[in-house]
Image 1 (tube, helix red, strand yellow):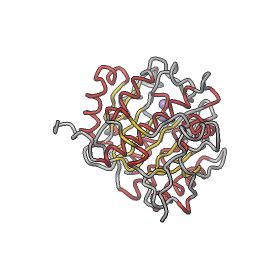
Image 2 (cartoon, rainbow, N blue to C red; image 1 turned 45 degrees about the vertical axis):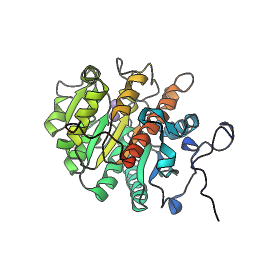
Image 3 (cartoon, rainbow, N blue to C red; image 1 turned 90 degrees about the vertical axis):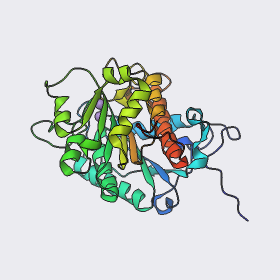
Length: 330
Ligand code: MN
Ligand code: MN
């Protein structure tokens, strides 16, 4: 008779500094053995799409190193045993080719597709925000057009960078709308703030069909009302949550490519995530963590890992069926 292995190395039994730091001390599983896991956390170590500070290629390693702090129970959703509810693994890193963005995008799409084919929900850790477009291509190929829930200081719906080049960390959500893999009418962008290139930097998203909630509006709404707005927008569509770490104020998350002053604190950002409910997530990522610019204590990497764990808790809560009913139902 075999006993099921514990979902993760238990830090009350094995000190945190012992062993190889996988995400939340979960088992590392290669593509050949991911089947049977409901969620596969995987690194996407590419910064080939970064128009400014490179270094997000080191994001997955830094996030994993800090994720050893995380414990399996989430008290913000009724002491939810996240790792006991969901079978989660660390599926390693997507292949990338430094300096070759189009080739890197093909390899990310293939790796994400392989995780999906094995029945796993992909939870990616970037990487700059260009990694999300190939993720969306793979997830939409399986689930159809996606509702996007996008936390970011920037819309990332610019048309082109540097004389007409279509792919970068600043363009994925225009490409996704054009390709029909995201349904902007079901999608919401949250957190926009700061100076603009053109007066249309925000309205270009609205023109594509997205709903835009600025940082000021998100903070004025508060977590519960914001969560209601997200649930109303997304409805029962298959959804992809993407979280750009520059959504958070640079005081709490300095290690990013394009910091914007005046954002939500770590506490405020986590409260917004913890209030989300009843979203049918079929994929997610946390991106733009750049450890080369992180502060003492690796605060950005720690927050990145914590946000990934909150997304896991949202997925587990939805599976448990104890998510509150969507807005309109109470
Ligand atoms: Mn972004
Ligand atoms: Mn951004």
